Image 1 (cartoon, rainbow, N blue to C red):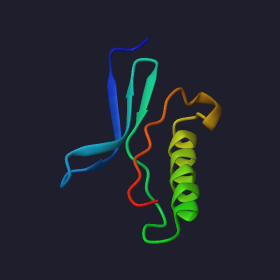
Image 2 (image 1 turned 180 degrees about the horizontal axis):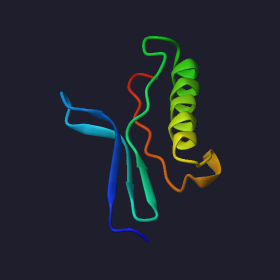
Image 3 (image 1 turned 90 degrees about the vertical axis):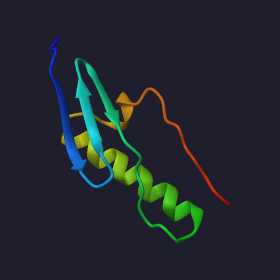
Image 4 (image 1 turned 180 degrees about the vertical axis):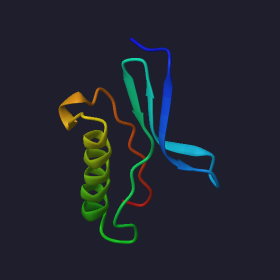
Length: 74
């Protein structure tokens, strides 16, 4: 285990990182894609973004422990 914290996909304007690695944990920030399209397309797009981010750090969807999903007017 390492004591280093690694941040990638940093957005200085919003002051957040898309991916944070800390020790043996990886935290993925919100995933959005296909905004303005039907909810099914938005969900599939968000899962695609999540999958891509996980893959960038050597993980798969099988590694996901918890997801918080926020919906508006579905």
